[in-house]
Length: 475
Image 1 (cartoon, rainbow, N blue to C red):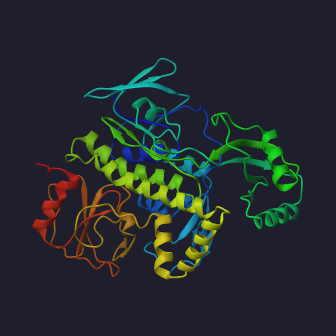
Image 2: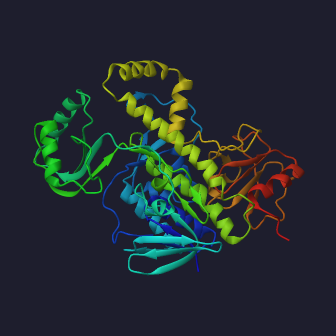
Image 3: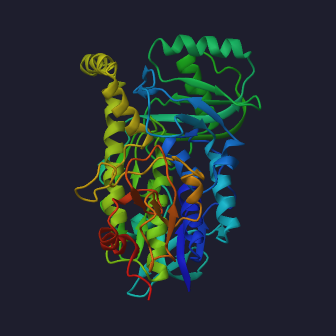
């Protein structure tokens, strides 16, 4: 029997498969498409996702394929300078096309032993007390202990489960294409600059290979959004908006996306779970979609592995829903607010002017940028130290860095006292005795996802908290 079937090999699915393999869980990824996607929908990683890659030892391979851009506050296009002393060692936006992110994460999952099966379309599933049966379009049936739907906004898994997906349908639609142009870049940039003054959402973005990525607003929302637009539709809309189609030719793809905003009612039904766009969709403003999905996988992976490996405490797997769904709900609210502020109507324009003034206050600016980058996320672990429930940023230690110690995806007790112990949990938690001038508490217990589960120096108190996240001590 397969331990976990992951449906969908996008960034969320491949990240989850890699996390499961860190713990020896047999993961099989089913991807309906025969070849990797060529469409570039996301163009970068925010600070928290960069931290995730650093925590798993992947950052160097990512840095070789992208570019660090200065991080600044930008809410609904209202740009302000970055506040000082952000709580991260990675205060930048990392520019990298989604296709490369997906490739690097898939390579990582494969290196760790995940099995990727392409051209496999899920058409049915059922579950019982012992596992899940997945039925594929070719009649194949696969049996697994758990199944996770990472199969996008039109998720087959979510529909087969009957999980509600309430929210708002698309009211605005954009056409996206990568093409070559027959005019000089100066001409293209001149027209683009003029159109931006009219507040039309228009943009061409140059690629290193000479092609351009265009995003243009569609005239209306398509009646059937599953049908991709034609290249001629895209050219026609360009002429309507810009007065010219710039001689575009050789399209790599043409697709559409809208501003639909929806959130799954549940992230778990028995042995089947949802992650990434299968659980939440929202307009792309702010660039949080891919990041949110990768961070879902980072939260879920170690918990699901603990369940498969038999040491998960009661209800650990349920904390995936209770922790990640509120984060997604917050992101949906942020994107809704930004979309409203882009409206040309007098009311939203007045609010936009007011918000621009408020963002000159550093606390307001910091609050918004920490939301956008996800470094402000704090899970509810109850009352306690201000670090409790937050992820701990990378800090310098006497010997190296904190994130260098987290590559294996295990729990970590960072002990500056040298008096504590994780005896009984050493197969799940690393005990590191070291000091950091950047860390005030005497000791912190970190979950595998880097969130602080305990702070203090009392050994008996620590022993009372270890079972909450890491189960019963080994005999």
